[in-house]
Image (cartoon, rainbow, N blue to C red):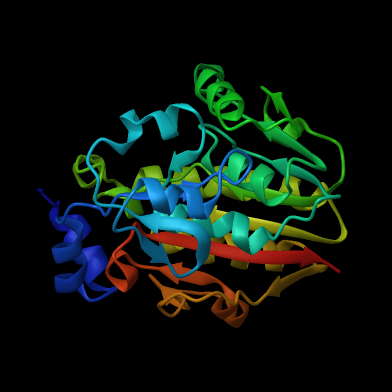
Length: 295
């Protein structure tokens, strides 16, 4: 894997560079989530030997079996091949059976179907996706997993004008946390792209916060490690709206401290409550998760 000098220089300032580069060039552990709408943890454990439990998700397991996506259990929707860190945002959102939820950027549907499973197919999920080409994958996964409490929409989420109990915003991002499965990511890396994405993320999170019920919960997540797309977005929202409250995240996982200052920009100490996960922390993808409410 090749890394640009600008990438190396930037990440030397953000983390332990040697550990980060070392883990980034190792294969990503394969993981599955048991879909309890169609199966049970006990059934899947009987079918697939040597499963290793993922500490933060009781339905999640690391698996050694090759081509698990070609198994009948996958095609029947009994399991979902889902990266371990990707299971965290729905857990942090903590949906209830009676909730009305917006999954803002839903495709291909791993988190959408996880929410549906956690709600036991009750309540209502609006699964929105802007990119029409990605709607097909979203639809197939919803059907495969037997989710009946989901309505799909294909629109710009910033045009929505309805309040929700809870909102999941897994925002479009630069995807630096996914380089273990997308090795070309460092090659196309440029800071102009990051600045552009940061502006898009700010626009979306501002509108989503407006669409949140008072005392509702909004979870913002990305699979990038860039401060401008993570702590910078949350800091911007805190400064823009006076009724934002950042909530702590308590799950069983090793995390790294939030970035409080980068490139002469200081961020609110409130971002300490967010969850920053480097790939070397838990041998997963990199992720950032923030949990907030409207006061």
